[in-house]
Amino acid sequence: MPIYLPEPAAAPGGPDGKGWNRLSLNAHMGSGAGAQCALRPRRWGALLEAYDTRRARWGGHGPCIRNGQCDGCPIRTALHEQRTVVRVNAPRVLVRVETVHGPGMGFTGPAGWRLWVTTGPDDQDYRNGEPWVWDEAARVPGWDLGRAYLDEHGEGFWLERTTRVPAWGCDITTRTWPSFARHAFRVNKTRVAHLHHHGECAHDEELLNAISHACPGPDGADEERVPVHWRQTQEMTPPPAGDLRIGVDVRTMSVKIVAVDGPRHERARLTLTGSGWTADRVRAAAEALRTHLADH
Image (cartoon, rainbow, N blue to C red; front, side):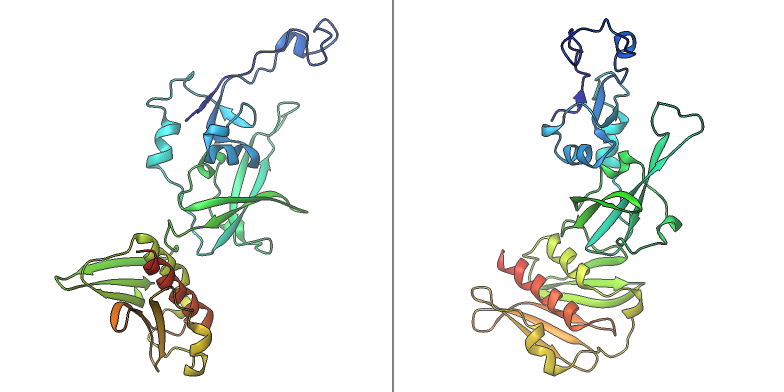
């Protein structure tokens, strides 16, 4: 995986092929940029390369701090040991890039950048949080890099959440017994869902993460009745996946989602509680159950 990006050698004829003997600062100073590190992006295009450094090219990255000695480099170590956490519970976030201008910067470029995580273009309160630096943007596990963004306020880029990471603010705990296992989903220490199945777990963590994405926020984490009605059962029930069928049973204080494989073999049972479970959230939890159990 190429990380060290040496500075390209200057063409002896200059950029136009006519030599460096004309009036040009480059004739005496060179580019002065030096070698760069593919894990230190300084713009969206370089961040795209940082996600897969096999396509990284010199330019647009921060300087190498160890002269190409990548083993033991703190930048490379931080990629695995200092992961950046997106502290927003949303399927996608907009990261705005703010240029920091220092006094007397002249022709040297910006003094630095601040990267602000927002819930979207209409989010105006994002400066209440802690900004990132560019190096932190290159080590965000469980999120995919989306498109670049530009509006009247400046530049930015999107990050798309995947099932490789749970929802922020949702705690998942697991307890196992000889004959069954149970996974509890809690928001603000209040249980909003639990997944029960017989025997050992036959799924991976992505199922639990996908269910956490459907869970309500703190305002809906309570012990009140669920707001959905039994008449909405059909719209909340996803279609079968092969032999796997999903049943949705709406009750006063809960919604039970049962995954049945074959005539009567229950694969899993998901129980949802609290006033935050809308029809869309119930459907999302049911679809997560169907999708991930069908693959195992």
